[in-house]
Length: 158
Image 1: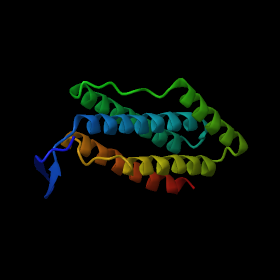
Image 2 (image 1 turned 90 degrees about the vertical axis):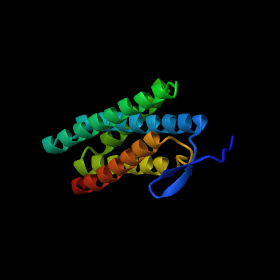
Image 3 (image 1 turned 30 degrees about the vertical axis):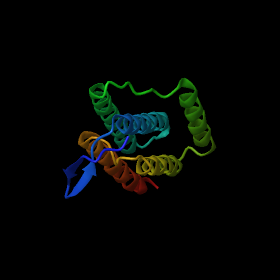
Image 4 (image 1 turned 180 degrees about the horizontal axis):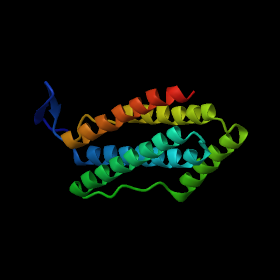
């Protein structure tokens, strides 16, 4: 469905929000932040440096905050995001644990965390935000900025 109605946003005109595009973007955002929180939570127990572990717990908490914000936007769209399947969680968990068994160093944990974060950034960049609401576009930007910052922060743990 294409509309000719436009709305102004940050100096440009944007197409009117499309309900299906909004639901697709919210589903992708929800998958991104829940997978990120899950990965960080699985890795954190392997980190022996207290400050790094604390930073990782805060990171997971922020992803949970984003997930709650996404759920609130989903309610406005009369949409319920799909949680990560138990199979996806298990596969991710086993993979991360095996990687940490092979090398339990902080450097290795940081590398894994950075790879996951980079994958998340790539996924976020692939979300079509052309016809989403301004609230979804704003939250998308916040999550993307957060992940870019998290990637930079993880470099100090190498």
